Image (cartoon, rainbow, N blue to C red; front, side, top):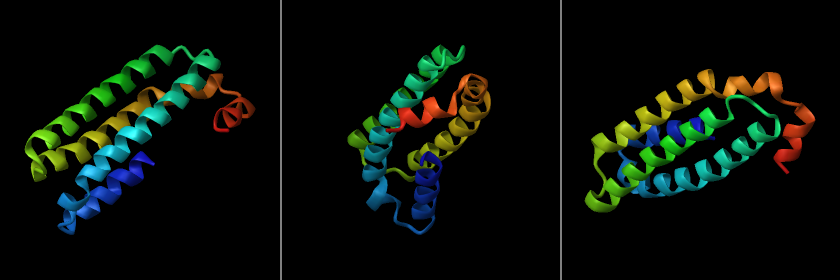
Length: 119
């Protein structure tokens, strides 16, 4: 979902619609990441994944960065450079986080347990 949000917003920027959708994107990102990160952290804890603390810390840093983007938007309105920085931040964070942290869950995950987390 985060990949899709980033891609959709990149397209909106390219098409000149960034200003119209930026506030909504920031709000959607905040709501989605808090919900998704919570589920992921529960899953890592339940599976006793050794990367659980590292994962929680990375999530907290993401939320902190996102909060900075939200504050700047509230204070200064839409700024193209900041919006582009947000997309770059999300894309870089996702690639790093998935490849470095999320993959550490795989050896500890029981697929049936993971499916119960999503319900």
